[in-house]
Image (spheres, rainbow, N blue to C red):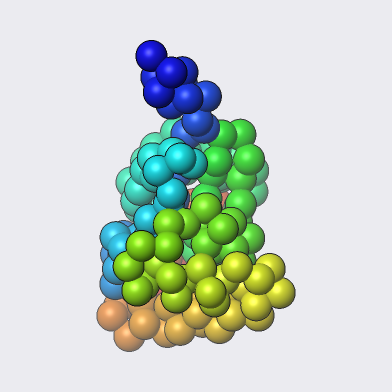
Length: 142
C-alpha cells in the first residue's frame, strides 16, 4: 500500500522533443530517469497534445529547445537537459555520460546551443521543416 501512495505523489514527467530529428529521437529513446522520480513520458512535438499547447501558451518555441515538464514546472533548452541529467538514472554508459556532461548548469548552458546548432544543420540537410508551434510567419524552414 505504501508504494501506491508514493506513486500517487510523483509528478507527471513529460519530455517534449522533435521525433523527426534523428539525434533528438535517439537521445529520448535512451535517456532514463530514476524510478524513484517517476515515469518519463515522451511527447512528439510534431503531434498535437495538451503539453504542446501548454508550451505554446507559455510562448516557448519548441524549435529552439526541448522541453521537460515535471509536474507544473517547465524546463526549456539547456535547463531541460540539465534537469533531466540530475533526475537521470546512472544505469548504462549513455546515462552515466549524460549525467557527467550535463550535471553542471554552466556546462549545459555552453553545450546545449552547440548541440542545437548541430541539430538544426542536420534537419536542414534532411529537408525537414520546423515545427513552428508559435505560428511565426516565414518560419517553416531551417
